[in-house]
Length: 540
Image 1: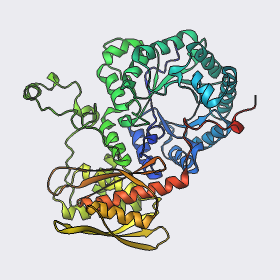
Image 2 (image 1 turned 135 degrees about the horizontal axis):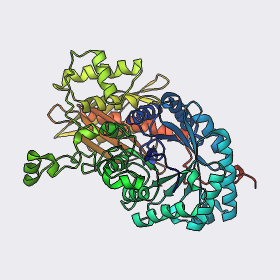
Image 3 (image 1 turned 60 degrees about the vertical axis):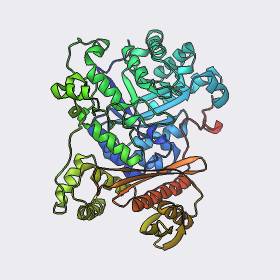
Image 4 (image 1 turned 90 degrees about the horizontal axis):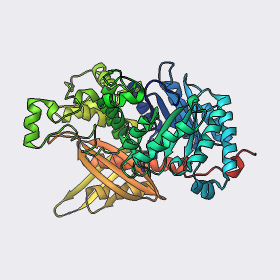
């Protein structure tokens, strides 16, 4: 049986693999806000990014390591390909953390070896041993991943894993990179590793998987039954393609079905000891924060955190729940921190109460940002009778998108009506202090605003998504707008909220433009798509 940490470790990769969701790119302040909330959630490991990808990624990982990597906080991890440059950059980025990890990987499936790496099996074993040893010389905690393990020859996989552990790997990750496995197959793969790798007792077995067939969570739970003790997952299941295994679903499955899973961890079925270290009451708050900052809306029927997860429409269900909630609910909503959070904040509320409520919601703002957010709150309180937590989230997620802004929206004005051609005038302030004004005609007021903004920015793009939803009920509700722009095949998202949806649309478009401009300058590597240049591979 593999090395057992005594419970199931939760490895959160929202800030690395989750950020690879199309259009989900986050700026530094947004990453820090999410990392701080993940620490409150008490995940065991935060994979903060891919430091070698770009100076921006390096800086983000380093800042997260300094801010969140306290002695009693989570392990801060960075991703690195099996190349010296990647590994050295990763070690430097995570250095400020008290508990730090380098996560290095190389592909092991024949299809990847032949078409991506163009290496033989023997060469990959040698690279694995050398690069894991190099990583271990820099940190004590090294994780090694066999990319595309789910499609690798198991016997070759055993050989690579044995070499990685012998070189100093403390965690071995088995990724279902393309989301191809079924639960029985994946469980069998983990069981085989436990049986056939002679030094597996020296490492924790981890799993990583994508949800292309909707089986990621089921695969992970089967892996736990067969000896996996670390689960790599994301908040709301975000990630490339169909996403990653969902953290909230995994944690709550292990929580609700504890009696079923206890024996697989060597416990009595009736043991009440938690199977993970996650503070479940922070789950809903974390889900909302990630959704707001990425602009990726959680589907209403999403398990655990969806808007309908605790809603009952059927009369029979309603009757049963009124008599006893256990008739149709297996999770107490309070367990994930879901409650009626209408608050008594208004235009007479002070800065201290405002800041305290934001901290409860997972936001920690510096003085200048707090001043600006508080000013927006006061402005909203003059227009809206009742302020809710959702309104506050909308205000602060807007605020978090402002840093690194090339353009700032100063003015938007539209004229539209039954017999009028929709016309918009917009004014932007640039980062060097110049003011730019443009007017445009569109098929509607929002289209006119977007046409005018595009004329000012002069950055080629295609608008591929425009969505509006109400933050709360009522005629004075704030409207949330999400806009996604495509440039050279890459999606960039902008998100904003206002009681005027035209203003929200303008701000969302500007936020997306800023991300697009920043992305053009950044041009990061993709950890899986980009193969290691031959010059960076070790000479054997």
